[in-house]
Length: 92
Image 1 (tube, rainbow, N blue to C red):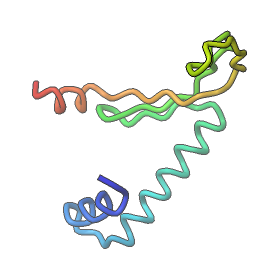
Image 2: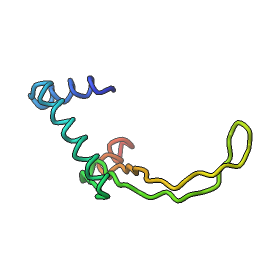
Image 3: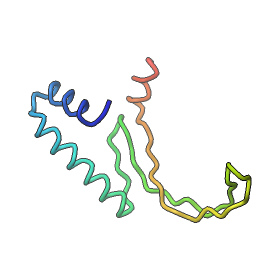
């Protein structure tokens, strides 16, 4: 499902216009991004949580050549599914 499909499906289920759903989706994306940049965790209970995590520097290998290389420290985004979503997907 791409963004257009998501907007159309959400508009149909909610009774909102596709433009309103698109604006809401864009606003959600902006709020989540801004919160993660500030270092805050964002949780939608039962559905998903987003968290910025620090990855330490480490030694890796180039898969093509096998040559050792340095992988620098960085900030990454950790996304975790909530319990309700996990149960729905697993059929439990």
